Length: 65
Image (cartoon, rainbow, N blue to C red):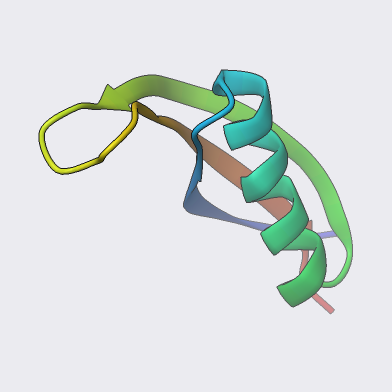
């Protein structure tokens, strides 16, 4: 069994949990054989956003066929 990891950044104006959920939802929509997600970093964008934009950088691991 071989896995590959990719980094995704989810965003939300509702908080960090929602930003992580955003990244997971995108991973589920685009990747097959998803096995786990690791949250690497959390941040808040203030400069260019009208409201605070919460960001979650996650590593997603999925099994290669």
